[in-house]
Length: 157
Image (cartoon, rainbow, N blue to C red; front, side):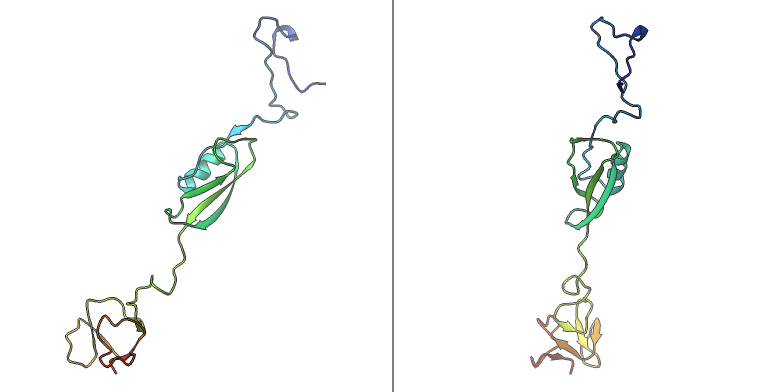
């Protein structure tokens, strides 16, 4: 038995040069391959939608990247590859780097405890005019506010 169905007239193939028309969409024939769309550079939701609309399953991983958060940075299989519907396409989506305690916080470097950035700091109870004031601090690096007058590593002592 054949899984092919002849759709020519009278149940026989015709010799008119048109060839046979074959229908393989039944349960015994596999669906035809589909071209995988290019989703690199697209936002995650649009990429997922395009892949699902083309008949593919989507597996998502996230990777730290300089690309905007939520942007697809790679895909496997690659675009223009043909595959059967239902196959899984893996996309890698950009995520921001986690914040660290050094450099990206809202603290002026060189002081402990944290001094939020300001145009100037003076010691509380001193003769300075601010606009920000602090008490005792440890100076752990540069001293842009000049709080460690005797250079012993402590300010406002």
